[in-house]
Image 1 (cartoon, rainbow, N blue to C red):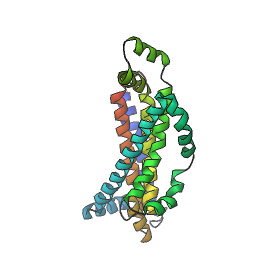
Image 2: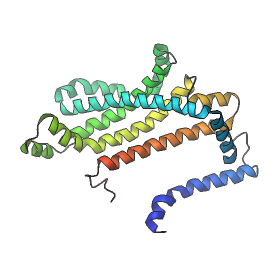
Image 3: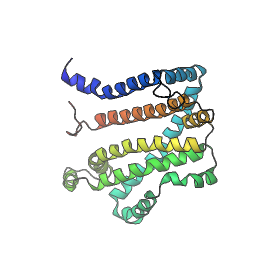
Image 4: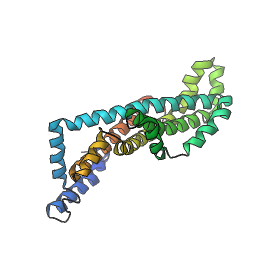
Length: 257
């Protein structure tokens, strides 16, 4: 096995494997009480039990639907406003300051107000996720647009590009690395927001499953829910990194070959 293969595929998993190993050993010999932190094997048994009943996939489907819908709405609005405010100075002067003021309000602090407005249905959770992902995508898109080298823009005009062609081929492409950083950051905020929203007011989803298990002191099921959030978050981040590698092949900083 080459050193590069080891560093790329094996090295990142050594520490997690050691943590799980010691966790299992300490749980088996009684150093960690089962009612405090069940052993990994006990958690796996609970996960398989929930999978067999079909409950797990139902909750995953509900949570993913909320996260994906909120991300599309909030991320889409953030991208559009980021481009508009970055390209048009008049929009920047009239809109950006207001957005920056709202950005400093913790969106999770709005949960009581959102429940009063929208109740505990799907609208409230999607609204909170949308707010959470809006700001990182907006800020990174906006600053990515205004940071594009003015020389590249002038060169594009010299080559006959104008209007939408100049915006897409030069300005937006130059801002794309910053936009994708915003996407990765927003994906993390998305799952964090959903965790809180589903544990405060929900009757389905992974967060609801965790809160329901807590009421019956099923710590193993609570840990399954936490691990699910971690896995889904990692998969979302990996998808964003794959998107970066595909869209930024032209950028030497992202060219891994």
